[in-house]
Amino acid sequence: MNIGIDKIGFHTPHLYVDMNKLAVARDVEPEKFTIGIGQEKMALAPKTQDAVTLAANAAQLILDENDKEKIDLVIFGTESGIDHSKSAAVYIHRLLGINPYARSIELKQACYGATAGIQMAKGHIALNPESKVLVLGADIARYGLNTSGESTQGAGAVALVISKNPKLLVLEEESAYLTDDIMDFWRPVYSDTAFVDGKFSNEQYISFFNKVWEKYKEKTNLALKDFSAICFHLPYTKMGLKALRTILEEGTEEEQTRLKKHYQTSTLYNRIVGNIYTGSLYLSLLSLLEQNDDLKAGSRIGLYSYGSGAVGEFFSGNLQPDYKEYLYTDEHLEMFDRRKEVSVEEYEAIFIDTLPSDGSDVVLNHTDDPAAIYLAGIEDNKRIYRSGK
Ligand code: CAA
Image 1 (tube, rainbow, N blue to C red):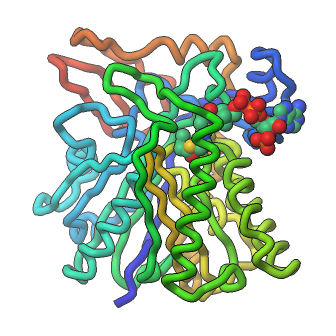
Image 2 (spheres, rainbow, N blue to C red; image 1 turned 90 degrees about the vertical axis):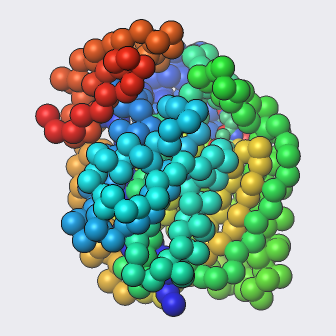
């Protein structure tokens, strides 16, 4: 049975910071951020957007009544969870009006969560071919003001419908994955910003990539020539390029040119959003699908997922006929166009103005937030989500 990605939706908050201006404020050369890191804009979440609302907005764009009826599993991958007990997926389930006879759970393994969700969804569809699974990946990447990770922050969510006979990408059966207990990036429960060993995390990202790539080739007998494009988890867009470069020599000059060209296309959206952790690989895939002008049905796309701590996986899929017709390209581009730039001073003020963590109530002003689904406040230790303006 063919199982894979039937729909992809994306949402990012309406605010962003220009990386050139952030560089000036931090007294570094702008090229360090725009070329060395490879980021142009960094999405910034207002107080009225959290992982739940970002994901709900991404999913609302793509789900029709048939999807809502057939979805019987909602899997939410996030490392920006809002509750140690209740899963973020349960809020989404209500906000989107999904069939009540569904399972709704949250998964965590850093930026690997959504990939874990997709692989579980594949198994679920194999056993229940008529059902559909909604997989969400939503995060707000926070390292802190004036930290070395600051230029790799961002915010956003992807929503994917996994089903049989998918309209976008059929996932192939084989996959190579690896776990190793390392401390390259982590966020203890008492902290709202991540801890990171930056250089070590870069090394491990590449080392995991090389290991799962070798394992994948061994399992499948495929080689670099069999791939039209490879998409990467993109904490920043230079990172995937560094990993890709380590295997390029396995291909001819023509294959190298093709992979480098498609790599650039696969980073266009990530360059103007920043790191969205669990959703990042799928934002890269979305960028490739919506912005390429030559990938045909049957093209094989490789996917490298990396979640610090760490788990890595390399898997692949084949593009489906007329996939371009089933994308939400115009809506995504309009969302980018509607965004508003904030100054570095405004960004800093928004960054430190966090929700109360002492249990007090708060009512949030949402008039400036154009998102359809937003956080209206906290009452009696309960987050109040609203849909519709
Ligand atoms: N013009 C062009 N390039 C310049 C430049 C200039 N004027 N000045 C510096 N650069 C280049 C540097 O040469 C360097 O390039 P290479 O990496 O190719 O050598 C690049 O800009 C970055 O410079 P530094 O290494 O000096 O940057 P840094 O030490 O300040 O921080 C970082 C970089 C380690 C990525 C840091 O931003 C960080 O810790 N980020 C968070 C962690 C992260 O994203 N890790 C990625 C792997 S882990 C993962 O993938 C999971 C996840 O999502 C977190």
